[in-house]
Each structure stands twice: as structure tokens, then as C-alpha cells.
Image 1 (cartoon, helix red, strand yellow):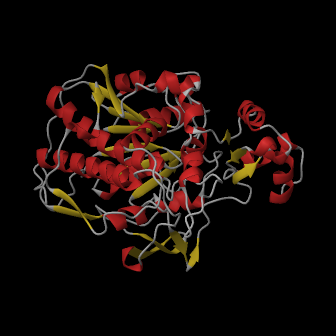
Image 2: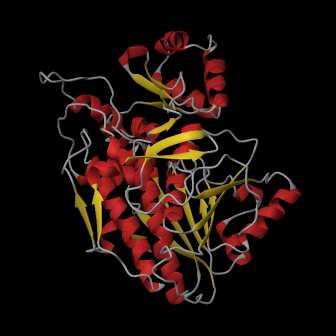
Amino acid sequence: MDLTIGDWTFGHIRFTGPNEVAASAFDVDGALADSARFAVGSIDHLGSRRGVVVPERSIALDQLLAFCTTHVEVDGAAVPAWADLSGVYVTAGGRHLQIHCNFPHHARGVVDRLRCPPDRASVAAAIAERDAFELEAELIDDGMIGAAVRTLDEWDEHPHALATRALPLMSVDAIGDATARPVESLSDDDGPLAGLRVVDCSRVLAGPVAGQMLAGFGADVLRVGADHLPSVDVGVMSTGFGKRNTSIDLRTESGRSSFESLLGEADVWIDAYRPGALASCGFTPERVARIRPGIVVVQISAFDWIGPWAGRRGFDSIVQSTTGIRWAGGQFARDADGVPSGSPIGLPVQALDYATGLLGAGLVARLVAHQRDVGGSWLGRTSLLRTRDHLVARRAPTAFTPASVPVDPEFLGTVESEFGRLTAVLPFAGTWPSPPRRLGTSTPTWR
């Protein structure tokens, strides 16, 4: 079953504020607004099935875009979003290549490959001597994160683009038989997702956004990670509201047993790790459906599950570089005097991550309601690549003047947390049930 945002209308949701917020060659505002509408509307739909009155909702577009900036401060100091070596570099022949070094082992791997000192100037000098596509291939073979900046036409002709072009924005497959679970009865004092148990296996950034949206509407979201895996502080803080965090080592028999016990009592499993990572530990969607008949599984990835790059490591900015979005930004950017930029320019927010995360949250709610209607166990999928294709297809690129997305102080909230006095953008819909918690601070059990 293939799903599009237009399959449903949500007349109770309206957008307020300015019509345009994001400065971009692409329709970032529209893509994020549609994804937010789908997420909130689908959550409200499930809530209405459970007895919660659906309110008339107003979403401020400028607050939604501010929410997507990942703006976080601790004790008045901004939490950095990027590591020193991350960024776009000039390569031989005037091409460009992006490296993503927010995880320390990725930074070490890039430096090892380039055989240079671990500072930005040395890395830039080493990359300037290399062919963009050859270095990209070497970094990928090393398990690192690198992307040659392609043009839109170059990406359209790429084998992976050809293999994935017909994919729907979201897809759904039955993965097991199960009776329909009863529709719980809630009161208006409950959130529309109250009592829903969600195992959130995600790190950066779309998966955590999906989990936080669910937590913000009352779901019991338990983020499952492992102590040996790296994390990014700004992501943990910005997407951790309302979640508990536990650590389970799936390399051990006791860890796998603990994880299986959690899934055995869960309603939803978000699997946003690289495709195949959790399956290699024995946890495929089909097996989880046998462990917990009636479960809803939503998987999120970067480059999707089919094609020559199926399962390839990637992040929002990397997908932008690889698929022509960053190149188009440079081609259509104009300064105040109308002079073209020419240098690659990414989207003003990580719109692929946030839009995909919102779609994932809506997909969860839609499939939980579907399970209550017809039974079965269900697998929903979406990816950054599918969201990219949806964004690019919305309209042709247009000229723009680059600018950051403003974060109005009225959109900020401050709470005391385990990290300190934390300031972040308030949710455009839903609430902050509790402050973010440090990773591994919760037991692997349900409340």
C-alpha cells in the first residue's frame, strides 16, 4: 500500500503567520507544513477514535520552521550543531565534497584516509588535491560519511536515483496476522496517544523527531540505544522532551533478551538505525511481529531499502549534497545585488530530517488506527530520499537570497534539566511532558 500526504484532508488544522519563512530554491515551507499537517492530523484522528475531542488547531508557520532549526541553549550558551571538520570542501577540478564528522570516529576515519593533521586547514588542503567522486567512494568503503556535490541532472542519471524514482513517499506492508486490538477509551484530559508504548531506536535526526512528536501527545516513548554508540548532544537535547532513555547492548544474549521483552509489550517500534543493523541482531520486522502480534513498525532510513545504495549511511545534509539540492542552492542563490553565488548552499534547516520525522510520526498514528480497524501487524517505511524527491517535485527551483530561519524569542521555552537550564523552541503542536534526559538513565522497562 502506497501513501501520499494528499490521501487525507485535515480541515481542523490551519496555518497562521507569514506565508514564506525559509529562504530556499525549493518549497521548504510547503513541504514542512504538509508533513506537520499529516503528523498532527493523523494523531488527532487516532485520538478521536479513542474518545478525545479533536480541537481546532492553529500552527504558526514561523514557529514550525524555528522548531526545525534544532536551536538549543544550555545555561545561556548555544549548543553547537556541527563538529569542526564537518562541512563542504573544494576538490580538484573545482568540484565540491561534503564530509560529515559529528561522530568522533567519522572524523578520525576521514583524517586517516587523507593522511593529514586533524585540523580544518589541513583537511581542506588534502581534499583540494583529490577527485570528488574518487574520494567519496574511498570514504564510503571506509565506512565514513562523504558526499560529492552532484548536480540535479547528475543525480537524475545515477543508478540509485533510477532505482528509487517510483517509490511512494510512504509505503505500508502487512508483516503478520493478528486480531484487531480494542480501541481504548480516553478522556479529554488525556493526550490522544496516552498509554501507547513506543520503542524508539533512533539517533540522528528524523527518527528522534518522530519519537518526540509521539511523546508530545502522550505516548510512553522509551528511546533505546547502547553505551558504545556515539551520539550528538544537540540532537539528544532537542528531540528528548518527554522521552525516557535506556541502554541495551544487543551484542549480548542478555541485551537481546531485554530488548525482546520490551518489544513484547510495545504497541510501536520505530527502527531508524541504518537498514539491516537491528536485523543483524535478530530483530527483523517479521520476527518482531511474531514476538508481538499487532505491533506497528515504522522504519526510517537515509537512502532507502532498494537500489545499489540500499542501506547506505547518510544524514540530511549528505542526501542534499548527493542528490543535487545543495548544488541547486548555489545556482539559484542571489546576493542583495542579484549576483549569483555559485558555491553550494544547503537548505536553511534540515528539512529532510524534520519532514521525514513528522511523516514517521503520522505514519505511526495512522497505522495504529488501521490496526484497530482491521487487525494485522504492519510495517510502514519512509526515507530522507523519498522526502527529497517529494520536495524537488513540488516546484522548479527559483532564485532566492540566502538567509537563516529566524527564531523569535516568543517561540522559546526554558526548563531545568539534567543538562542544565535548557532553552529550546517550544513544540508547534503538543507539549513538553518532561525535560530531556541523559542517555542510559532509565531502566529497560515499561511504566
